Image 1 (cartoon, rainbow, N blue to C red):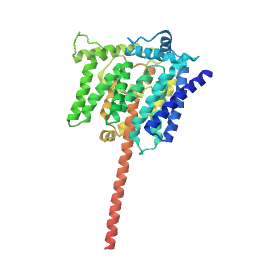
Image 2 (image 1 turned 120 degrees about the vertical axis):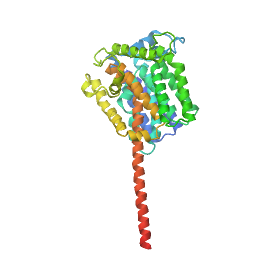
Image 3 (image 1 turned 180 degrees about the vertical axis):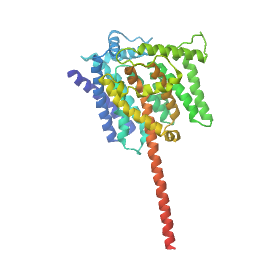
Image 4 (image 1 turned 135 degrees about the horizontal axis):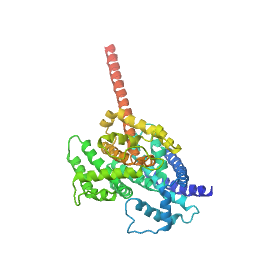
Amino acid sequence: MFDFLTFLSVYLVFGEITIFILCKVWKSKNNEIQVFSLALVLRILTTYGYYMYSLQTSADTTMYFHTAQNSVIKWSTFFTPGTQFICNLSVMFYPFVTMFDNRYLMLFLPFSFLAFCGSLVFYRTLKPLYASRIKKTELYLLSFFLPNMIFWTSNLGKDSIIYLGIMLIFYGVLNGPYTLKTIVSIVVGGVLVYFVRPHVVFFLLVGFGIGIFLERYVLSIRSIVLLLVVTVAFLATYQYIFKEIGIQSETENSTELNNFYDAGVNRMESGAMTLRTGGAATQSSAQFKIWSSPMYLIRFLGSPFVWQAKKPIQLGSAIENILYQYFILYIIINWKIYRSTKLLPYKYGLLMYTVFGSIIMGMTYTNFGLTVRQKCMVLPCILLFYACVRTQKILNIKAIRIEKTNKTTGFSKKYAHTLQA
């Protein structure tokens, strides 16, 4: 109990100070401050719950903690992407928790705190879609209180850091016009995402590259420039990214697309075989077939389904997934509204990132645990799509009502004028 109270007190102090500063900058209202504080308390409780969960499982968190205990910062390897980067972050944070008895629990705090900052950034990204058009309750729910977005991003590990990085990218991209603040947000977010999971940067570049083209039915100078920027960034980084994630062309010094495609498929299949172990393993095939892409997409976004759950935590995730399945069906049913709306900038870029990333991860992650955890990289997109469609639908209904009212009023005035005559 003493460990929990210590963790609660320290986290509350840092969290409330951050909320106070941000609310001053954002000029937030009192009800928003109250929601932020409630979200902070929930994040603290969830983080402690993840800590207790890690004590009963073979989680990566224990490996990061032992590394932090027995290592010193090596700046020559600090910016090594992947697991090494998180280990180095753990080593960097460790001196700040040495004064506490339960150092393992306290090391969760900086990672969870950064993820909480990501939730605050996501709130600021979602808010323009809602404005005063819909009750704020739904905005608060999507930003702070969905279990998957809180529990798995509260861990001592990759998910908390990459969640913050993706939220910073979305905030910078969607909250135009581009200023120094938004550019810094995109750059910092991109750096974090790259050093945690380089392949997600690849998904983002490919998604936005295709999306920018689809966004403009008539090519303009602006769309061509944006497409060129993304293309240059892709060409400048793709070989290095492929090398980091274990994809190398079979032909040395070759840049032929088919060679990298074959190497990528081999990497996905070997990863799928490696991950298909333990009680959370699925029965899915570890062979990639391009015509099975819709199945991979459904598997990643929709699973685990209720009938697939084998453990209580999987059942909880399956029940929560019903809500996300509803969001996806809502978007599909109202696809015409999504296609016509202008509320969400770069909507096709976000859509292509979601589809492309989900297909690749749906094929590779033959394990319920990984599938559930790493949804935090695409679920914010689903929530953005849902909020955009819902708001646009309400605006369309209001516009129809106003039009009917104007017609009725116009007819009444004309009828009254006729009677007077």
